[in-house]
Figure 1 (cartoon, rainbow, N blue to C red):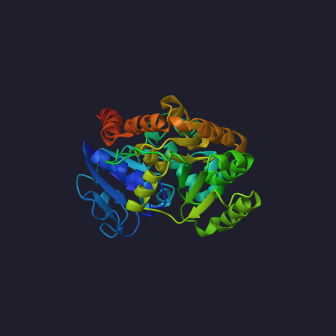
Figure 2 (figure 1 turned 60 degrees about the vertical axis):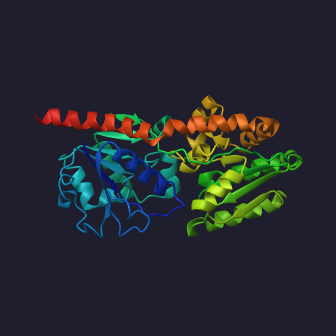
Figure 3 (figure 1 turned 90 degrees about the horizontal axis):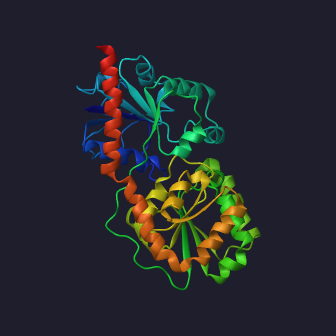
Length: 368
């Protein structure tokens, strides 16, 4: 089957899609004939991938100008698509010529739409794109629930891909608990204000456990005031001795920090499916995950950590349980790896292949 993936995304390594999109396409390349067309200028990170192409290769921004068989593929998979919904390709997609699936990655949920202040004309165009798709592919059941049932009559749940790394947690600190957050410093979105407030509520318990909270990530200009307010919040709650802010980490440095840490924190208010959490689980890190992470149910089912509502009080209770169960970190670590194995490239690639084939065959049958 010939599968064309369309995206409009920069290779910014501090964003989840910079990992989830190529991971998904690579998984599919092991089963189907794939072509990735990214509607931006040249990417230096993805250029080495044999199936990757962008506007530097095909500047017209048109599906029908791509080489055969991808000018008329069996199916098109639209990654997010907010920006490309108003482009020439967006119009081609809705012409009904080729069946297409939209993977919104949380773009159809009300809360992130309001938070990101998406221009009305772009949101309207994207809504039409989603409504006219052959199906919508959500990453988690929680993302589907958050997005509502009005976009499309057909949907499926197929999560992100995370390969199990060759290294994983084998030793945990005995004299302290090192907790780690990795991601964009977007405090409201990522729930970092809730995390800090929760730490303030159980400050004494955290100190007795010698608990350290490391928050790593870049802060984009539009969130700089939020970041400043977050640092002020840390100071006001007398947490400067246990909460540390660091720059973004990538590659080997990121792997080293994951392996050095004991627990991963995902206090997000909303997500599609956070790649940072999946990666942490793959290294065997137990996690603290909120409902907004969209993976609360999975973490509970596998006993891979501690979960909470999106309130500071509930997060504080999860952190207290973490302290009380410190002697079970190795057990939770093994569970985390078992959970991550559910998202292997082979498993997800096959699941996508079956669903995409079903859509393509149904469309082909209706035209005969």
